[in-house]
Amino acid sequence: MGLPVVAIVGRPNVGKSALFNYILSKRLSIVHEQSGVTRDPVMSPCEHYGRKFLLVDTGGLGTHPKEKNVDLFDGMIREQVMQVVADASVLIWVVNCQEGITPQDEEVADFLHKTGKTVVVAANKADNDNVRKQAFGLFAPLGYLDIHAVCCTHTYGAGLLMDAVVEHLPKQEEDAEGEEEKEPKRLKIAVVGRPNVGKSSLVNRLLGNKRVMVSDIPGTTRDAIDVPVDLKYNDEILPATIIDTAGMRRKKQIDSVVEFFSLSRSETAIKRADIVLFMIDATDPCTTQECRIGRVIVDARKCCIMLANKWDIASKTIKEKEFIQHVRERMPFMDHAPLHIISALNGYRLKGIVGHLLHVREQMGVLIPTGVFNQFLQDTFARTPPPMSGTKRFKCYYGTMKQNNPPKFVLFCNKRSLCPAHYMQFLQNQIRDAFFPEAGLPIVMDLRERTKIDEADDTRKAAAGVKRVKEKEYQEEHRRVQRRRGYIKKG
Ligand code: GDP
Ligand code: GDP
Picture 1: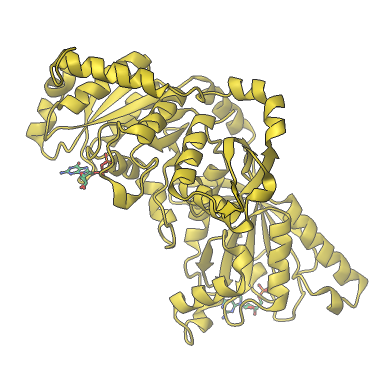
Picture 2: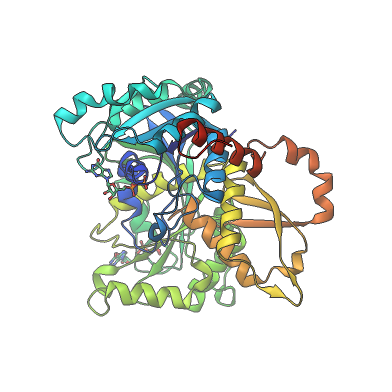
């Protein structure tokens, strides 16, 4: 089952996105080490004292950072928020201490009370002690008494707020955690790359001792070696098994039986791995052989992080930005894989790799709730519709996430052939940016045509949170509230 959802809700500009980033600040600092995130992530796996959950920023749903002024309770955005709320176990309702209760807050209160969900109030913009003390009295009239003063700009108060949030999460997560602790599931990491790129040097660095022989002669490490290790990043521990492989050589060059086995073992290692660390040589990147190894990883649909090694030498001749651009141009099929620049020899930026692996492991646990995913699809199709194909256009009726690692999505559509490859690529990129930023996970899409949707009708109905609240009903309700408050005249 997926993680329980904790959704951040509230009217615009109260600081929902700021709170989302603040709660995730530890993680995001790792993610942002590398530029290239084009869209703010809207959800992210999160952990507070061992309790895992999926944090969703409804402020980020359906809006690009530049379009922040969209009214939260307008049309599509409002529907999206309702879907997320339906999926959520706990809601964090953000209000603004500096403005107090506004009519829009009252509207949100009406809506939240009707949902019957557990609500923890984050009284944001409590920039000083005076305001913090007044927060409870200020917002208690809204009807929720679990109120916590927070200040995103001064990073104050998220600890207590999240203590309250996790208290309301479903219990089963804790039990699963207990079992996990008895026998930790080790993340299988394959270190691959052409001979002499520095794989053994990296593995030695990660292991902290010289377990694998390092030599200048290509192919010294012949067999893949599995080494269990507990990798450390600050105070976090990542139980892992490192699969160190022999350098992959081009098939043409294989001149001995031993080397043939080395190659197939490397391929096997990729297939066995949860994450592939694909090392390329920064002094001579993107050779034909490296591109082939890349293709093997892509074909195996494996999560991949690219490591450009020997930066100590390469940095003398090329700037980081130019280098990244060069690699991206030469290996467009590896676009989904984040690219780290390292030096296994002097340890440059090696610590970040473990941080990144922790981030990826979390991303692998994400199952996007169906409601959230469908609203995301609706938004994406509305914002950038697929091109016309003759008189027809590709339509997607409904989608769902089937599994993770790799994340697989099934989309029920009118006709598969109406979806051009570039639009499919666009959808994959949008999904990656919004839900799996910087994780190196390939996004797998399975398009099913309309006839099949009928067969799947029952599943569709059963899927959580897909029931749409009818526009008309909402408008009537909205008008009734406005009338009651005297904002519009009766009759
Ligand atoms: P959203 O529309 O609810 O997602 O709001 P944003 O996260 O975009 O924040 C809206 C504005 O409030 C931004 O200009 C933030 O810098 C500001 N803001 C967020 N948190 C705080 C805070 O704790 N104190 C103050 N003074 N400003 C804040
Ligand atoms: P493998 O064949 O991929 O396992 O590569 P090795 O780890 O055996 O490294 C091959 C050679 O490259 C050795 O001489 C290493 O010392 C050297 N090497 C590895 N990493 C770096 C690096 O970051 N910078 C430099 N200058 N040399 C490196």
